[in-house]
Amino acid sequence: RCDAVDLNLGCPQSKAMKGGWGGALMEEDQWHLVYAILRHACTAPELRIPVTCKIRIFADDRKTLRFAKMLEEAGCSFLTVHGRQRDRALHHAPARWEAVRLVRDALKIPVASNGGVSSYDSALRCLEETNCVAVMVATALLQNPELFLPVTEAETEDDASTTCASGSSKPSLAQGVRHCLMYLQICEREPPFSVRWARDHLR
Image 1 (cartoon, rainbow, N blue to C red):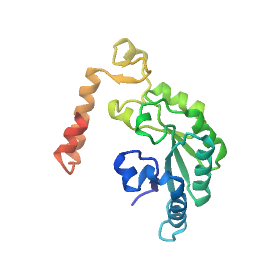
Image 2: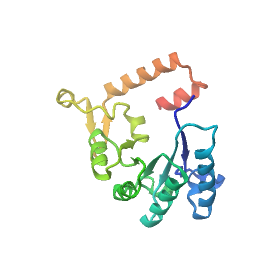
Image 3: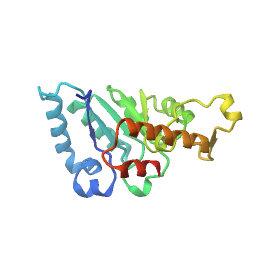
């Protein structure tokens, strides 16, 4: 049993773009299909849970707003906006929180911000600058599962974590070892489908 169904419209991976799913559905000639899928899901009597969406921004903020408003009109209950475009060349570009803020201010449904959050402090800045109800983090949490724990004064003195020039919070060697052991304990309780998964995660 799940609490919601999410329609990911922002995946920029080449297999998604070539396969006609994920970020490919943000192409304007596919908007009618997105609207139809979302509308059907939101009105289906068999599906009595919220339907949420995740998107990326366009180069043109006006186009981003049109797309987001269409999703809201179709019945989207919660929208996550990644502040980068789908172009893989822009994968490491700074997230445009100001574009996310435009979407947040234009919609009535809750909006979460994704992209550009690499530390506890940057998560707080993101919330302040976008006025979103939440932040979504992916890559940075793989590097540091304790990302959202505020760094205490004692930890700072003990050099338990280090901060890069980019502002991202990187775990120390001791933290990295602890994270690996915690992960292996989880794998022991809930064995993964393949040993390769655990190996790749630890890498």
